[in-house]
Length: 281
Image: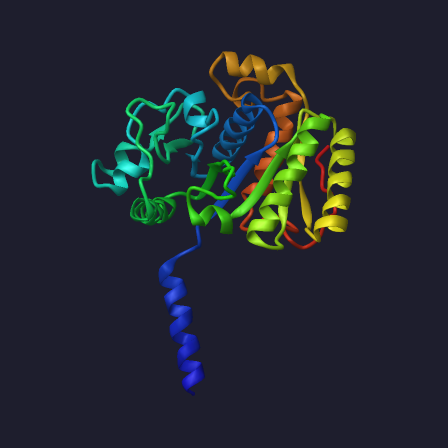
């Protein structure tokens, strides 16, 4: 009877807590502009499908999505954690249909504001936890630092997707990144998203990476799909719009809508369940 009462209480706590926020951390082995284009267009595709999307820019060394969209000049989430401003002052809606927040303002920002120590990191993590409960899907534009760490612990426990292209350099860098991640956080699955590639090219990249990761790292990779190279991506960017909005029939638009359909699910299909590829047509 005591066990039944405990189960009831635990179930009630879970119901009152509400659904667990969906957090996906994106890391990239592609040029910063390719990563930014992917995040903006995937975020716009998810928003267009009716999802409440927040992109958290956790980049300090690299060109992040907030800078790409020109919303990196204001206050950051760290300043909310330090009680210098309110949460609604740092979340910026953008015309593409989603919102953006900068985690902290690093050297690229005006008046650099970075976590100064463990207390700042703890306060920032708590503020991030409060923030993500207000969004449906949180996409983190992330970096894995040279000292093998993330700005926030939650990034390590979130779903992690690595973006890679068909170039030998990108593939090598992506594999090295996965190796570092697995050495730091132990055996766990990682998603692979191939951009700038045909379906056939992406399948070759994924199959080769998945085979090597299984054989040499005992790590399972999952295909998240692919996005083809498409001139309409660049045209949409010059217009300051997402390709799914400006050119809805473009090949990249079709691919991003398919990706959005997968990321919008409560759990990524087969995430951590195997290494079979799933590519859209």
